[in-house]
Image 1 (cartoon, rainbow, N blue to C red):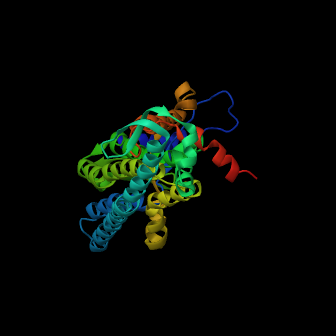
Image 2 (image 1 turned 135 degrees about the vertical axis):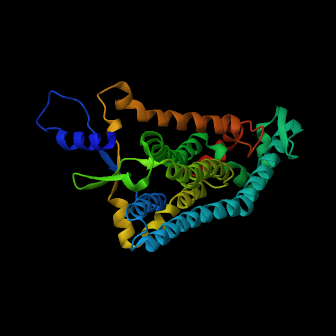
Length: 343
């Protein structure tokens, strides 16, 4: 069979000779799963369904079915906690922060401009008649609030937002790789009985049945993609509405905590054997072997350009925290910032 032929080729080929300097071919064979709840659920589905089919519902089939249910339940709990936290943040944190920053910036615009229009949310935006001296008419508390909004320091805000976006892009990239390797590249086989082979001492996933591919797509990959994109949007919105430079950093760290829930639950709740089996399960990536090309050397940097484009577009075009923001706070707050943040 094709799978047996691939295994024989890998066994006979061996690893690249470290002393062979004439070849620049990168030969890849297998890679491990990340140690988290997504990988653990995937491992359980693949390994246990294979053993159940191979043993024809033998001695430990009930235990293996229970492990599949438990692993998927832990994954659902992981996603449920993430969804719950995002909803609560949206209701009790982000909504208030957005309301407050809109009020603060509205007071600033209404004071600094003699001609204004009102946004759909009822807050003024300047059209003409800007007068820098009117900044002193704001109370000390109003000055402090408006000068500490993230948009008052665009460079600082852009960097923090880029770091947060990079964090989420890492999650999106990992999910895409999951899809590419398991769903797109692995052969579709008629039964899970032959889904794994032992190659050079490694338990390698070499194919998946159509049913298992659909299970992984619907229960693991698509929800992970959706949660990552929602968290990216929610995080950017929360950071844009933060009225403190210190809290801007703290909120970025707090947001990462939601992403890391999959690691927390895995390391805390998953039994040792399940962890060992997850981390000793390999997937066939021989198709990723390559020769030096522009893409193989520099392709991953494209994600950096994606981050730059997203952050720039969000701040200057797509953010609805402060609709119609005029980037006029920085100039008005220069003296205030210099006085209070100088050593």
